Image (cartoon, rainbow, N blue to C red; front, side, top):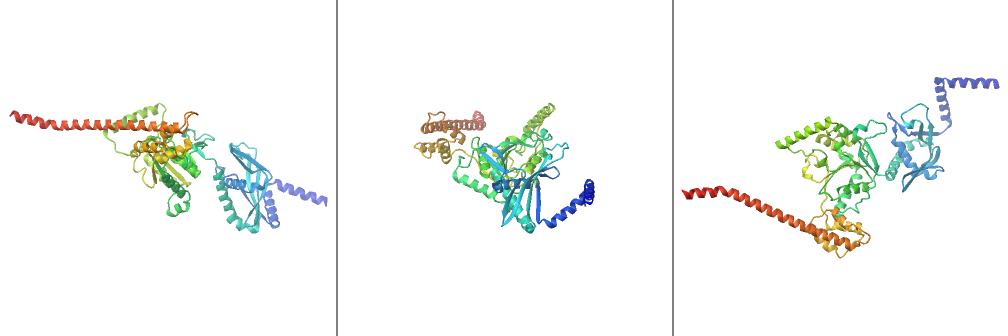
Length: 484
């Protein structure tokens, strides 16, 4: 018996050493086990695809398990995103039990050591994956409903836990380096909210409702056949809070912010590549778009064309010396806003800011590209009350009436009002700050009055000069007639 057993073992070892025979043996073994084992296993690898990118399903499952199933795990893995948040997740080779519609399932977080070959990808050394185990009688429920439930819940948890990021585009000369990306980022920590934004309450509510309508409109945009995106044009004088509005929108929607600098983009192709690399649930901002590139679209006079030729010659000289000039065109930017590639990803907001909206080409800011135009104007009394609450912590004061009257008679930006309200020392109280603001408003009112008088005097002088110029031929004709 032992001799026969030894020969059988020897035969199996020989068969296992031959790759083709080993494959057949593994197949027969799996078939034999499947008849006995009533459980089904589904694996979700961490990396996959042609470029070995991180799988979205793995990330969503990881977020789902960190929020629900990890509460029942005995071994947890901690990661700190910032000084205020601690994220717990399942440790490697740990198993937890989950339940869905009365069905019990098992999740395992496994790690497999890779080969010892040299690879440019650091994740090729250790491969992680999640394994879902369930009874085969519940196959339809798990594959049809449960996995969709896990992915949806995981994405929602990841969105709530994710730190907002502020991105800026990198020069294209660095794109080909390993670990270099088209965007670099840091944590978005701007504290602005709609509660602290200096604006009329009715206007803020209108903007907030519009943002919520967009955020919840995935099915609506699909039904009407439009990409899930929306454009906002913020225009107004400097210091009226355009950048603060962008920060408030990002904090309100919990979106990332991509600050796109057009002057560093070499051409339209690079602009399209940057768009592809942006993530959903994001705000793409182009600040001071009237200053970024020549996007006026207005017909030029001969003098302007001559100036452009001279400027082009200067740019050629700069290029010969090593400098580069952006070749992004108005057509390329329009395709970036609402072309075919703009629909990739979905759930994006595009924001343009400008101080001089009249300089922009109407084609660039028409409805459908910039869907909502928001004027960021001078400080009104309602905006002042928000700033007084933010900077001084007061809702009412005897000097409010004087401030309100002066704000109606003169123009001052919210930035200037805030600077005057900000205490400059520990000794300054609320009344001192309000008096400083009143003094600044009075001075601005006087300067505006003097400027208006000077403009009127200049107009009157120009009108008299024009009248004298037009009256000279008539006077000359009268003198000639009298002499005859």
